[in-house]
Amino acid sequence: MNARRKFRREGEERRRQDLIEAALDSVAQYGLQGATLRTIALRAGVTAGLIRHYFPGKEELLQEAYAALVGRMTEQAKAALVMEDATPRQRLAAFVTANLNAPIIDTQVFSLWATFLGRANADPTLARAHREGYLGFRNEVEAVVAEVLVAERLKPDPSELRHHAIAINAIIDGLWIEGCLAGEMFSPGELAAIGIKAVEAELGLAPLKHDPEK
Amino acid sequence: MNARRKFRREGEERRRQDLIEAALDSVAQYGLQGATLRTIALRAGVTAGLIRHYFPGKEELLQEAYAALVGRMTEQAKAALVMEDATPRQRLAAFVTANLNAPIIDTQVFSLWATFLGRANADPTLARAHREGYLGFRNEVEAVVAEVLVAERLKPDPSELRHHAIAINAIIDGLWIEGCLAGEMFSPGELAAIGIKAVEAELGLAPLKHDPEK
DNA sequence: GGGCTTGTTGTGCAAGTGTATAAATAGCCT
DNA sequence: AGGCTATTTATACACTTGCACAACAAGCCC
Image (cartoon, rainbow over all chains, first blue to last red; front, side, top):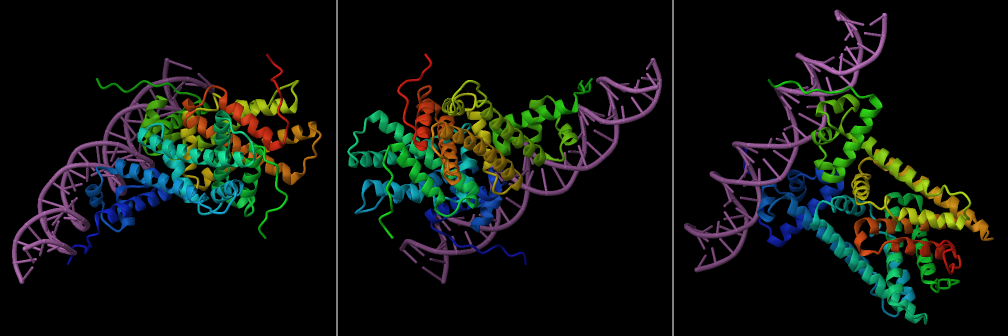
């Protein structure tokens, strides 16, 4: 009796991915302190020792996990921008809407985001991962804003453009946080509506009377 | 030899305050996992056992610490609103400026904010503490916005007022985060300038040509 | 100043932590 | 089929953690 546990050999990439996913789940649920190697391994369906076969240590696993999270977040956000046959203004509105609804508004993702950022001061690796994600997002915003202003026959001065991007990024971030933390305080679509109005006001666009669709 | 350590008996309120302060420092520096009873006690200048004399356990200490942090943050923000002989619009601008400069822009406070908020999903006590602070802040914003709109001869509809408050709160929060995380990317006063312009655009106020002072 | 209360220290402990390493076995190669 | 290799398990270990508790002494009261 006391038979040794059966196991399957997974491909290296697959195992790493599973371990990272299990690490993110554990951190979201139990926090950085509760996300122990044993907890993570249990969720990944392996034993704790295996983790050290793929990662030098716990810290490196968590760093890679955070990088994966940031990558996924920015990727999702950018995906909302690929729209053909849409005016720049429509794309901007769709971008804001996408960022203020599921799946980007998500309590688990928010927990992860906050938990890791809380360590950014002390861990330069986390700080850099965040910085890159943030700048990528902001540049994306700036590009769309430039298109919108050009389409509206407004001349975009570079410094002004930067300020617009910073402000709009702040609006989206701020509303995203409120939505993640207190989603039930807002009716469906309310945050997106607030966000679009705020963004258009920031850019000095005259409000449209009615949404063309419907 | 091996003499027992000398100590002073502090008043109960003072000790509790010191322990809470030490807990916040420890969390900011080492995170929730690194903020051990021994670390906290060391920073407070006492031994670990004493903590259990003032708090039922570590968790309760940290909850009280977070409540204290939230209280301090909202208190500082509200303090920026007490200005006599100022127009509502000036008060609003001063409010935005105060929230986007030191001491409210502060990397340590941000670390604490993020660290605790990351646990809000799993810990209802933390969630409630945040909710109260957030709503207090937003109501403060809403009150000032109402004054501004009245002074500007605009009729504030309650629903519109709420949306303005939500948006402005998001603007301030978003810029606050950017300032805390990447303060060196912005020139002094830049965030405040961006914030004031964004807020005034949200409210549909015509920009002022020059600041009256100076 | 001598007791009494209680704030404070110091030690101990069981549970849990990350890491190291030996033993086992799954699955490929020939 | 049978060996080889590297993935995976399992165990051990030194250390830290939160918490419990007994000893102690600071400072008030009379």
